[in-house]
Image 1: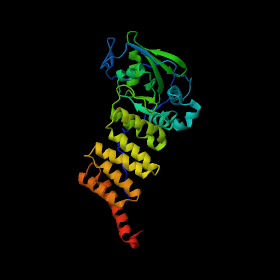
Image 2: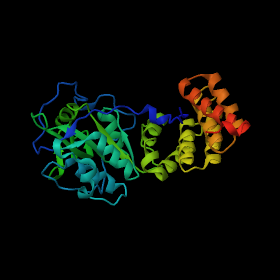
Image 3: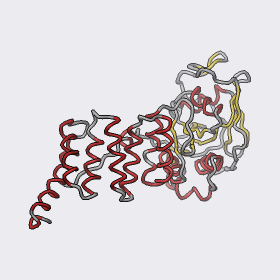
Image 4: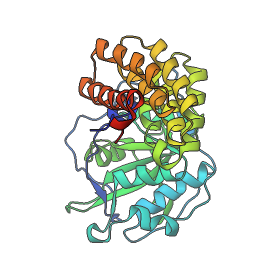
Length: 334
């Protein structure tokens, strides 16, 4: 059994539902009986300081009248964020022909491969409008028909509370306007799912440390430089963000810079001394660097702490024991 290096933030990633966008070009109707979040001209649970109206200027529009609303919507927000791409380039990444649509999971994955951080928003109108007010266009999933596949992705670019309307880049309409109730009912049918794609180092309003780092962690395997930039920015914003320290350690370990990885894991251990995961990873980095004695000391601390992944700590301890036996008796080397 080999020791297991732990990716703390990655383990906190929420499971995604498997709804997809079929991109029917129908006007949204009443498809949900969920309580409305805009009543009598006011938002329910309105964020403090939210402007009465806001518009994100300069959001690109990619017209689509087929099943490619997923690639079109994603291209819109990625190009806005500075990524050079087109819906056609994104189709192989996000479109599933057999389903005639795009899975939410694939949109998030393609965002990461483009070096952007996809942040899934709380299912609240106020949270979505807050991002628009901050200058972030929002990809939303709507139910736009009665059929099982009448799902549609669009990009919310503006809202007007006094005027009771929202504006979307949608299908063949560059500036589709709906009442807030119309939009909310079509959006609620899919669980009010929405996300933004942000550049590493950008911090959307209302997004806390854990949510941000949970969104960054999956970038480690597909866009490591973007992940590094995001983690470093997170530590400037939250100096005690031990998960960001762990992330930097993972990145250094992946490029076989074991001394640097050990430094980051040791920093994480100091920032969160009651958790065994940083010490486990520190032990693995020290072992990879060839210092089994120091590794043994680190894993003993992890074993003593015992949580949250004791089996992983025992696995690492077994690897260190093998290295120790080989060092003390070369004939025992595998």
